[in-house]
Image (cartoon, rainbow, N blue to C red):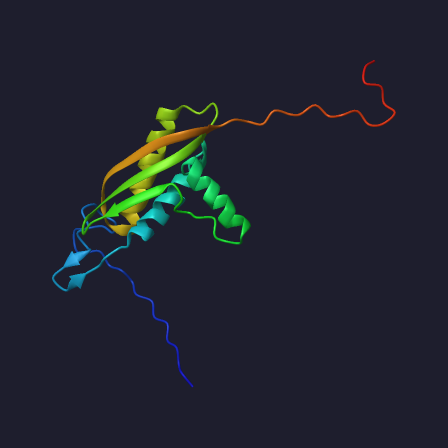
Length: 158
């Protein structure tokens, strides 16, 4: 029989430093190197961007179409759809393609998304985020109420 052990490690900041500081100072040390995959940063950025009101969806029209097909076939609803990330040893850059809700001020929304993504990635990964580029690819319009057909026997006009 195999015994499985689970251990928890407490991460202590170096003296004079706080956790999640900019510059990736904790990722490359004398004792080793921590690497973070692009996919990890893309997921963090995608989750952070989704938390901002006024963001409807992510990705270009083609990416959304493939996502819908993948979803219909039982695939995941990609948290990373619309995210493109480059990760180095100490820095990361993020490109986001998003669809905004109609009526939202796009410059304000872009700044809110940018700030929230930077905070999330820097806090969780310890990477310095050099840039977050946002491309607004579409505006989601509210659907108009379609006129209801009268029930049988009801007059159409009064």
